[in-house]
Length: 157
Image 1 (cartoon, rainbow, N blue to C red):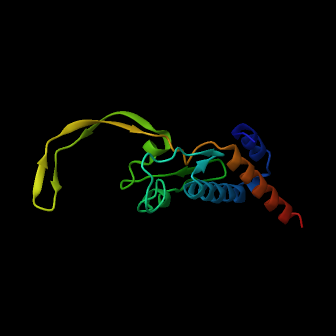
Image 2 (cartoon, helix red, strand yellow):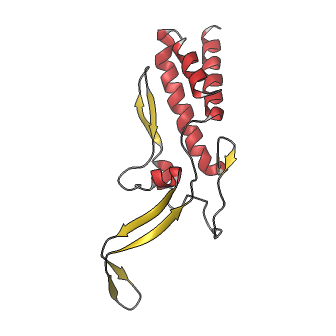
């Protein structure tokens, strides 16, 4: 089920169900997006493996800050928005969409075992592979449709 079909279905629902449907959409989408970190795939497409396999942890998970930043931002009967990232997780969009280009590195102090070393401002080429964990997903749309159908069925009993 694509997003247009899901939107058309949601628009056809009675107004008294829409508020509960918005909560169902928000819960389902948040769980689905967080689950992509566990399954390491999005909408049936596996993520590219790491160039250097990690010895501990999981791909895209070091501290858990990125996965924990996935949350509902807006939940109304007319609109549900799930967001990821915050001031401490400014790399969410780069990991979700990928990036290739030049990055400016500001001047900073690098601590070593022996002493602190001053590093001058410089640029560096970066190529971050796209590992999508949020976006339009037919798999998610099917889950939302199924959950709302189940909710409507439970109301009719």
